[in-house]
Image (cartoon, rainbow, N blue to C red):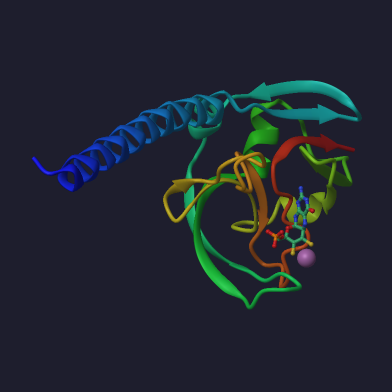
Length: 173
Ligand SMILES: Nc1nc2c(c(=O)[nH]1)N[C@H]1C(S)=C(S)[C@@H](COP(=O)(O)O)O[C@H]1N2
Ligand SMILES: [Mo]
């Protein structure tokens, strides 16, 4: 074997070793991310007091809906996506909260961004959702550049500034 061929073989072996380790580590990440997604909790409060706490599995036991919504931000053109989630009012009802005499629902994200949605709007059909998938894939978390695991989506809003990303809780007031 000539010297050059030896060097090339060694380089190929190193490349294979590096990429297999990469795949292996990535496989671990995928598993960790999937677990974090399944364990993601969404909390319902009533006037600041926790009254219910839901995991991904518990939220998915509610009536799942798939709908389209148009994401329009200040620096992107409108883009239509297919989201999957449940109506926010269904989670609130599951927590045993009656919306009759309430006015507003404050939804807060992991970055403390808070959006107020009127009870009237939340009670509308096919409008205010807590989504967990976009185009069939989990939304991902704030740490991995996603917008979930849960994201408040208000379908009928023209702009998306009130779609709370990384939503962790909703306080009914
Ligand atoms: N938690 C959280 N949600 C948020 C925001 C934010 O900063 N934090 N920004 C809002 C704004 S201004 C827009 S336009 C949409 C989409 O933002 P993106 O383009 O950063 O995804 O998310 C909204 N929801
Ligand atoms: Mo925005």
